[in-house]
Amino acid sequence: MPRTAIDIPDRVDYLSILDENGNLDKELEPTIPDELLLKLYRAMVQARRFDERMLRLQRQGRLGTFAPIKGQEASQLGPVANMRDSDWLVPAFREAAAEVWRGRSMESILLYYGGFNQGGAVPEGSHNLPTTIPVGTQILHGAGLGYAIKYRKEDSVAVVFFGDGATSEGDFHEGLNFAAVFQVPTIFVCQNNHWAISLPRERQTRSKTLAQKAIAYGLPGIQVDGNDILAAYAASQEAIERARAGEGPTFIEMVTYRLGVHTTADDPTRYRKEAEVEEWKIKDPLTRFQKYLGDKGLLDEGQTKQVEEEVENELKAVVDRAEAQMKELENEPMIMFDHLYAELPPILQEQREELAQELARKEESSG
Image (tube, rainbow, N blue to C red):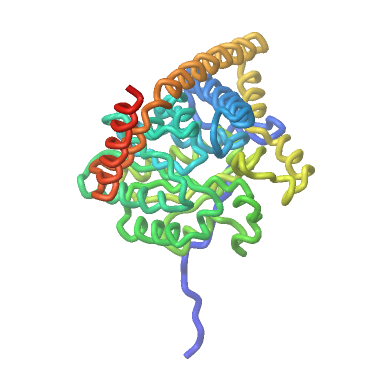
């Protein structure tokens, strides 16, 4: 019998609307209200300055290890700007910009990385999952939430974030396969920042793109200029609308770059060249968006300075409040058992009781 070709979808598009030089493709420019554009700009400035402030705090010994987001703001804010409060956000460990947009307080982030469990507490009624440290595990959570939404016939979607390194995990493949089979309303957003700690993207896979992995599982995949807030917004809007209409999941590869360290325990100079970093600084999403807003007459030098001053004052107040909370909590060791489980397992109940007894004995002896 002769070999015959199998007809399968094999096209993956790349979307860029506003390039690093400020060139705009007006035919692809999404319709975004001026108010939302300015809100996105302020959120990008806030995310960048908060990230820089956290790095200084960590270097001063006032915070623990965390994963900076500098350079990846647009790839996060584009998707979440299209989400409703009833939609589910499933973050990894580098989504501070997305989480703050969705209502998480910056104080809670500082508490979390300061070593206090209160920072990981999810407010009642919130549709944001907690920070996920293990690589890729949250992809399954996003697929499962999508299944629950479909089962309950709710008008919601789930948006799950992960990095290029997570595409090497089994959870990624299981999650996409499950989502496609059951046509769940989940959008998988991969922030391809080119480095999984010290492993470059080309050592992760031989695929020309990460987006094309969607083809194998039978769902749409698209590669997007993740440093272009307009492209990130437009691609996510299309995916979310399709999911909400019952047309299943989408895989979005946001091509971006982390301008800083993987985490504050990392030294990127050991594995990547400074010339590469400088090349990506030219593609900075913040300066690109600032120029776009200026060209539209929505932002001038005075307004830019005003936003920077407002954010600076806001962050100072945030840090002061967070550190005041830390000081109040540091002498309450019993709180280490809070905000971890809805119901403590027996082994932790036993440990909690032992600690309570030990503290009571110390209190008696000191009295």
